[in-house]
Amino acid sequence: METQKSYKKVFLLLFLLLIVFFFVNISLGSVAIPLKDVITSFFGSEASKSSWEYIITQYRIPKAITAMLVGSGLGVAGLLMQTLFRNPLAGPFVLGLSSGASLGVAFLILGAGAFGGFFTNALVSEWSLVIASALGSFLVLLAVLAVTFRVKDTMAILIIGLMFGSVTSAVVAVLSYFSNAEKLQQYVFWSFGSLGNQSWNSVFILSFCVMLGLLIAFFSVKPLNALLLGENYARSLGVRLKRTTLLIIVATSILAGAITAFAGPIAFIGLAVPHITRQWITTSNHSVLLPGVLLLGGIIMLICDSVAQIPFSEYTLPINAITSLVGAPVVIWLLVRKKKLLF
Amino acid sequence: MFSETPHTILQATNISIGYSHKKKSTVVAENISFQLQKGELIGLVGANGIGKSTLLRTLTGIQKPLSGSVSIFNKNIANYHPLELASLLSVVLTEAPTSKNLSVLEFVSLGRQPYTNWMGKLTPTDSEKVQWALQITDTQKLSQQKCFELSDGQLQRVAIARALAQDTPIIILDEPTTHLDLYHRAVVLKLLKKLSQETEKTILFSTHEIDLAIQLSDKMMVLTEANCHFDAPCKLIEEGKFKSLFPEDTIQFDTKTGRFSIKD
Image (cartoon, rainbow over all chains, first blue to last red; front, top):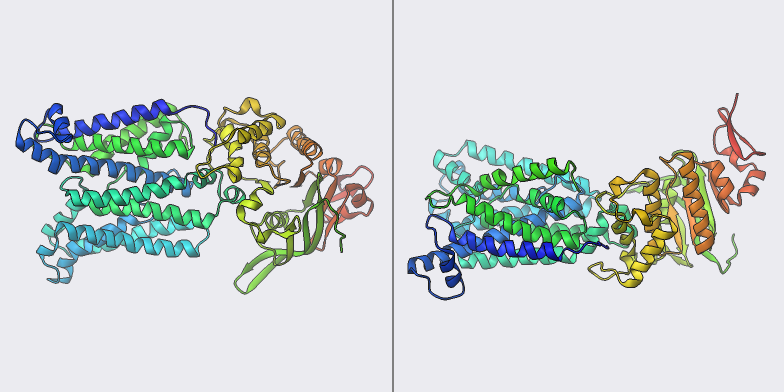
């Protein structure tokens, strides 16, 4: 696809913004650390205080990297779903992946109460949460893939994904009804989403999964562009539809599944970032959109996380609330200003 | 039934078209045979629901014929690799592109996909073909506009430009004149005539504009419930084939003028 305008400047600006917000994000928090110390300890030298250095390398850098991975990954997953389903309302979770993850976690936390004493509190460690939610999304993914093989119509896949979502939410509701307050609170906290408390180990695993998903997405740029014309045109251009659909769904599942497993169900970003990008970079060409969404998703998530930390205070707000509080007005403002949804 | 000629591009042999669901199959039309030659403009007419779209879908390989075969250059289209087929046959569909946010230039250059690398990057040759397609359809001035800014007539010409950019010996258009006023219907059909003459492409279009099609087409296909008549339009008129197109109690075909008129 030929796009006349050059987007080099836009990408350069986005890249610089990403770096700036990365360091700003690290420096802000309950303990504000001067940017100078952030940068020196980032490049391996010692910071002025050793406690700062510990906070930076063991807590804040993993958190900032997680924020970027989550923002980029969910943004790209949302873009893939919106193009595949030709629906501006689609997001990374339309396939029911986050509901699957929620179900897994709900069984782990709430199921203990409902089925009585089988799981103990000790079992609900961080890793078991990750495993439960990964298992949940994976099972839904298998179901979606089975459906994809049988059903020809992508719209049907969309509806079936939404149905999976409804069913799992219903099961979660039933489980919640039978659980005690303490368990319920634990579950609710998980559903708020969290970028912090990631060990370097989990950051590596998450990066690997996100990179894999992004790689598949980048290799799908050409069929994605063909899909902008609709399925029949895409087929007439030599696109193998089934293979492409499958590839896009697998990429989305890897991205959304891994991110939900580590950071919880992060709302809004996946739906909003592609729209913000389209309104700003006014093209539908995926070879421009995809890197745009990638960079902007990372930036927006870093900003949201910085806000959620409430600089100079000890409070940390749930990231899920902040993504919507920051993101929704931006999308509304963009739509009102341009008076038109670009899709 | 037909003798092979060196200029035969697309050939349908005894095909029956329709849909198959598990064991049951619904036949829409059967015993259809024809050969399309190089540089021919062919109009396909028939009443609503008679199977025009099904026939076009079968010819473009979107669905398989229930029996018989469709071949391009003497090779069954089912045996072509999707990319190979995409370099032989392009389509103009009734549906508008899903993303109307595409600029005309982007829309038309998507036609080069069968030839571009994995990123879809255009080479200078690709850009040349795109510019040529814009020029011959007189849509160069629109190239920076978005598809949602275009009128129906402009959009139809741009869709034809996209098919031209795909650079195929055959173009199949599904009702390219719907939603257009008389002037723009004539513009689109004259453009197709010009293309078939100047580029020697084989162009098959379905339409409800029977009188315009009679005036412009080299050959016509008249699809009725019983038969598919395929010949030059004047021959078809002589043989009275258009009379069987619609029930004669409401409209009547006048063999002298080549038009339908309301029956008193």
